[in-house]
Image 1: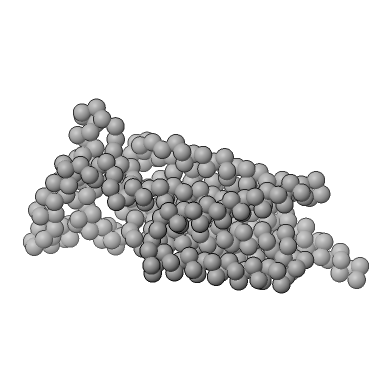
Image 2 (image 1 turned 90 degrees about the vertical axis):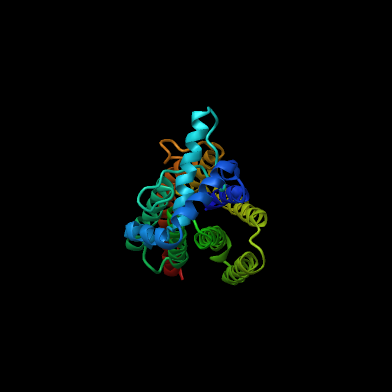
Length: 320
């Protein structure tokens, strides 16, 4: 839901800085990288590097220039700290201590745990809710779309490349749009299926145009941010309005309302931008960790609501 929109806000902000942060603008850092690459990344030195590089690092795509940037980053950070300066960012990110092949270990693990929570709740949903429930297939599709997004979030935080960055962005956008569609089906589509079908076609067209523009024309971080924030706000307002209107009649709707409010509150964690604790745990990782129980609560709402709708549809069938 809105957590993916908040995530895109941070990613877009970081990406805007990626072309030049304080750390990677430092002549000391640039000279260090240049000398390291000249010394280690060609000829026999490169063969020596590859023969001694752990297999898991090569499989994850870590190259000799990448290793030079990583080592020189810490050289620069050391000098900054010795001279009493604040820790600088490099290419739009704080310096993180690499663990095995994980570039951002805490955020990668938190993304994995979010995906695992989605998978567990999907299994529970499919076990407890019959496929005849009116919302069953829409909720299951939403769960798979969310799982795919958390997979790419895990990959992106494990290894930040142009491909993994784009997949993380695009899949996050897909989750936001699917959450809007989920809300449309629940609030309008059950009574007016044609409206839901038309709205689904519109959302698919929007997603196709969005991805095509960013992939084929220009990867505009500002546009991507504005588009996703706008859809995220629509998603939040629509869900919240429906919850407020139905909370007395349907007590389980309060779970959804709590989810919407929690996600908005937790997104404020993104404003606490600070150097990683122990060079591992930053505000973004803490925010990711905090959203894990929120997904559990939202799927609990979907389960309760689907069972309610099934009971309601069965009662109408008996009356007919």
